[in-house]
Image (cartoon, rainbow, N blue to C red):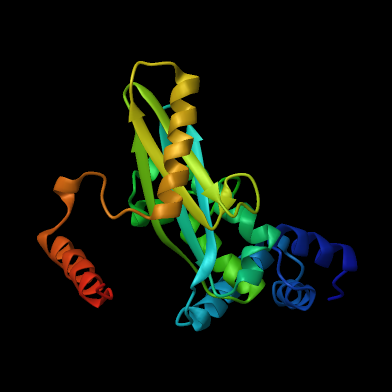
Length: 227
Protein backbone atom coordinates (compact mmCIF):
# COMPACT_ATOMS: atom_id res chain seq x y z
CA UNK A 1 0.00 0.00 0.00
CA UNK A 2 1.28 3.46 -0.93
CA UNK A 3 1.23 5.98 1.94
CA UNK A 4 0.70 9.56 0.75
CA UNK A 5 2.87 12.43 1.96
CA UNK A 6 -0.24 14.31 3.10
CA UNK A 7 -1.26 11.40 5.35
CA UNK A 8 2.22 11.27 6.86
CA UNK A 9 2.09 15.03 7.41
CA UNK A 10 -1.31 14.79 9.12
CA UNK A 11 -0.10 12.05 11.47
CA UNK A 12 3.06 13.97 12.26
CA UNK A 13 1.05 17.10 13.13
CA UNK A 14 -1.23 15.09 15.42
CA UNK A 15 1.52 13.22 17.24
CA UNK A 16 4.74 15.22 16.92
CA UNK A 17 6.57 12.01 15.99
CA UNK A 18 9.30 11.84 13.34
CA UNK A 19 8.43 11.60 9.66
CA UNK A 20 9.91 8.11 9.16
CA UNK A 21 8.20 6.84 12.31
CA UNK A 22 4.89 8.18 11.01
CA UNK A 23 5.37 6.53 7.63
CA UNK A 24 6.27 3.22 9.27
CA UNK A 25 3.26 3.41 11.56
CA UNK A 26 0.88 4.07 8.67
CA UNK A 27 2.41 1.23 6.66
CA UNK A 28 2.03 -1.18 9.59
CA UNK A 29 -1.68 -0.39 10.01
CA UNK A 30 -2.47 -0.03 6.30
CA UNK A 31 -3.16 3.70 6.34
CA UNK A 32 -5.56 3.83 9.34
CA UNK A 33 -4.55 7.11 11.00
CA UNK A 34 -6.23 6.39 14.36
CA UNK A 35 -4.58 2.98 14.54
CA UNK A 36 -1.29 4.64 13.57
CA UNK A 37 -1.63 7.06 16.50
CA UNK A 38 -2.04 4.09 18.86
CA UNK A 39 0.92 2.35 17.21
CA UNK A 40 3.11 5.39 17.74
CA UNK A 41 1.97 5.77 21.33
CA UNK A 42 2.94 2.17 22.05
CA UNK A 43 6.27 2.74 20.39
CA UNK A 44 6.70 5.99 22.30
CA UNK A 45 6.09 4.28 25.61
CA UNK A 46 8.77 1.77 24.72
CA UNK A 47 11.23 4.53 23.90
CA UNK A 48 10.37 6.37 27.10
CA UNK A 49 11.01 3.28 29.19
CA UNK A 50 14.56 3.02 27.84
CA UNK A 51 15.25 6.61 28.91
CA UNK A 52 13.58 6.38 32.33
CA UNK A 53 16.82 5.59 34.12
CA UNK A 54 18.59 8.71 32.94
CA UNK A 55 18.82 11.61 35.39
CA UNK A 56 16.48 14.56 34.77
CA UNK A 57 18.03 17.42 36.74
CA UNK A 58 17.06 20.44 34.65
CA UNK A 59 13.58 21.60 33.68
CA UNK A 60 11.06 24.26 34.63
CA UNK A 61 8.78 25.43 37.42
CA UNK A 62 5.20 26.20 36.41
CA UNK A 63 2.91 28.44 38.46
CA UNK A 64 -0.82 28.94 38.09
CA UNK A 65 -2.75 31.36 40.32
CA UNK A 66 -6.51 31.57 39.99
CA UNK A 67 -8.82 33.31 42.45
CA UNK A 68 -7.93 32.37 46.02
CA UNK A 69 -5.72 29.42 45.09
CA UNK A 70 -2.29 29.01 43.58
CA UNK A 71 -0.34 25.96 42.49
CA UNK A 72 3.26 25.24 41.58
CA UNK A 73 4.68 22.23 39.75
CA UNK A 74 8.24 21.15 38.95
CA UNK A 75 8.81 19.21 35.72
CA UNK A 76 12.36 18.00 35.14
CA UNK A 77 14.27 17.32 31.93
CA UNK A 78 17.82 16.11 31.28
CA UNK A 79 19.13 19.35 29.79
CA UNK A 80 18.42 23.06 29.86
CA UNK A 81 18.14 22.89 26.06
CA UNK A 82 14.90 20.92 26.38
CA UNK A 83 13.64 23.39 29.02
CA UNK A 84 13.76 26.01 26.24
CA UNK A 85 11.77 23.79 23.88
CA UNK A 86 8.30 25.20 23.10
CA UNK A 87 6.63 21.77 23.29
CA UNK A 88 8.12 21.19 26.75
CA UNK A 89 7.10 24.65 27.93
CA UNK A 90 3.55 24.16 26.65
CA UNK A 91 3.34 20.83 28.47
CA UNK A 92 4.51 22.35 31.78
CA UNK A 93 1.99 25.19 31.43
CA UNK A 94 -0.84 22.70 30.88
CA UNK A 95 0.24 20.53 33.81
CA UNK A 96 0.40 23.62 36.05
CA UNK A 97 -3.17 24.47 35.04
CA UNK A 98 -4.31 21.14 36.52
CA UNK A 99 -2.19 21.24 39.67
CA UNK A 100 -4.76 22.98 41.89
CA UNK A 101 -7.16 20.04 41.51
CA UNK A 102 -4.40 17.64 42.54
CA UNK A 103 -3.92 19.43 45.86
CA UNK A 104 -0.19 18.72 46.08
CA UNK A 105 -0.52 15.01 45.21
CA UNK A 106 1.86 14.07 42.35
CA UNK A 107 0.23 10.67 41.77
CA UNK A 108 -3.18 12.30 41.46
CA UNK A 109 -1.78 14.92 39.07
CA UNK A 110 -0.17 12.27 36.85
CA UNK A 111 -3.49 10.39 36.64
CA UNK A 112 -5.48 13.45 35.50
CA UNK A 113 -6.51 13.90 31.86
CA UNK A 114 -4.11 16.15 29.97
CA UNK A 115 -5.85 19.31 28.61
CA UNK A 116 -7.15 18.90 25.06
CA UNK A 117 -6.27 15.20 24.83
CA UNK A 118 -7.60 11.80 25.80
CA UNK A 119 -4.42 10.74 27.61
CA UNK A 120 -3.29 11.19 31.20
CA UNK A 121 -0.58 13.62 32.25
CA UNK A 122 1.76 10.66 32.79
CA UNK A 123 1.08 9.34 29.28
CA UNK A 124 1.62 12.80 27.78
CA UNK A 125 5.00 13.09 29.51
CA UNK A 126 6.00 9.71 28.09
CA UNK A 127 4.87 10.74 24.61
CA UNK A 128 7.04 13.85 24.77
CA UNK A 129 9.96 11.76 26.00
CA UNK A 130 9.60 9.68 22.85
CA UNK A 131 9.29 12.75 20.62
CA UNK A 132 12.18 14.78 22.07
CA UNK A 133 14.41 11.91 23.15
CA UNK A 134 15.13 12.96 26.74
CA UNK A 135 13.93 11.65 30.06
CA UNK A 136 11.41 13.89 31.85
CA UNK A 137 9.48 13.64 35.09
CA UNK A 138 6.92 15.51 37.16
CA UNK A 139 8.93 15.75 40.36
CA UNK A 140 6.68 17.59 42.80
CA UNK A 141 3.72 19.92 43.18
CA UNK A 142 2.13 22.06 45.90
CA UNK A 143 -1.02 24.14 46.32
CA UNK A 144 -1.89 27.06 48.60
CA UNK A 145 -5.33 28.58 49.07
CA UNK A 146 -7.03 31.11 51.30
CA UNK A 147 -10.62 31.53 52.49
CA UNK A 148 -10.21 35.31 52.36
CA UNK A 149 -7.22 37.12 50.90
CA UNK A 150 -4.79 36.40 48.07
CA UNK A 151 -2.11 34.01 46.91
CA UNK A 152 0.93 35.98 45.77
CA UNK A 153 3.54 34.58 43.41
CA UNK A 154 6.97 35.28 41.97
CA UNK A 155 8.89 33.56 39.19
CA UNK A 156 12.67 33.95 39.00
CA UNK A 157 14.48 33.61 35.64
CA UNK A 158 11.17 33.60 33.81
CA UNK A 159 11.34 32.11 30.31
CA UNK A 160 7.63 32.49 29.52
CA UNK A 161 4.52 33.62 31.45
CA UNK A 162 4.24 31.43 34.53
CA UNK A 163 7.39 29.44 33.70
CA UNK A 164 10.89 29.78 35.15
CA UNK A 165 13.65 28.32 37.29
CA UNK A 166 12.50 29.28 40.81
CA UNK A 167 8.82 29.66 41.68
CA UNK A 168 7.36 30.87 44.98
CA UNK A 169 3.79 31.06 46.29
CA UNK A 170 2.74 33.05 49.38
CA UNK A 171 -0.76 32.79 50.88
CA UNK A 172 -2.02 35.88 52.75
CA UNK A 173 -5.22 35.53 54.80
CA UNK A 174 -6.75 38.99 55.08
CA UNK A 175 -9.86 41.06 54.40
CA UNK A 176 -7.68 43.99 53.32
CA UNK A 177 -7.30 45.65 49.93
CA UNK A 178 -6.61 42.97 47.30
CA UNK A 179 -4.21 45.09 45.25
CA UNK A 180 -2.07 45.92 48.29
CA UNK A 181 -2.12 42.30 49.41
CA UNK A 182 -1.02 41.11 45.97
CA UNK A 183 1.85 43.62 45.97
CA UNK A 184 2.93 42.50 49.45
CA UNK A 185 2.62 38.85 48.47
CA UNK A 186 4.85 39.37 45.45
CA UNK A 187 7.48 41.20 47.54
CA UNK A 188 7.50 38.44 50.12
CA UNK A 189 7.75 35.81 47.38
CA UNK A 190 10.74 37.63 45.86
CA UNK A 191 12.53 37.65 49.24
CA UNK A 192 11.80 33.95 49.70
CA UNK A 193 13.24 33.19 46.26
CA UNK A 194 16.43 35.08 47.18
CA UNK A 195 16.83 33.86 50.78
CA UNK A 196 15.48 30.30 50.50
CA UNK A 197 14.27 30.18 54.16
CA UNK A 198 13.85 26.78 55.81
CA UNK A 199 10.74 27.65 57.85
CA UNK A 200 8.19 30.42 58.33
CA UNK A 201 8.46 30.76 62.12
CA UNK A 202 11.45 30.42 64.49
CA UNK A 203 9.38 27.93 66.51
CA UNK A 204 9.34 25.57 63.51
CA UNK A 205 13.14 25.23 63.44
CA UNK A 206 14.39 21.87 64.65
CA UNK A 207 16.89 21.70 67.55
CA UNK A 208 19.36 20.01 65.20
CA UNK A 209 19.20 22.90 62.74
CA UNK A 210 19.67 25.46 65.52
CA UNK A 211 22.64 23.61 66.99
CA UNK A 212 24.23 23.28 63.56
CA UNK A 213 23.93 27.01 62.85
CA UNK A 214 25.10 27.90 66.37
CA UNK A 215 28.19 25.70 65.93
CA UNK A 216 29.01 27.38 62.63
CA UNK A 217 28.81 30.88 64.10
CA UNK A 218 30.83 29.86 67.17
CA UNK A 219 33.55 28.45 64.89
CA UNK A 220 33.53 31.64 62.81
CA UNK A 221 33.85 33.76 65.97
CA UNK A 222 36.79 31.69 67.23
CA UNK A 223 38.50 32.03 63.86
CA UNK A 224 38.28 35.84 63.95
CA UNK A 225 41.67 37.47 64.67
CA UNK A 226 41.91 39.06 68.11
CA UNK A 227 43.25 42.55 68.55
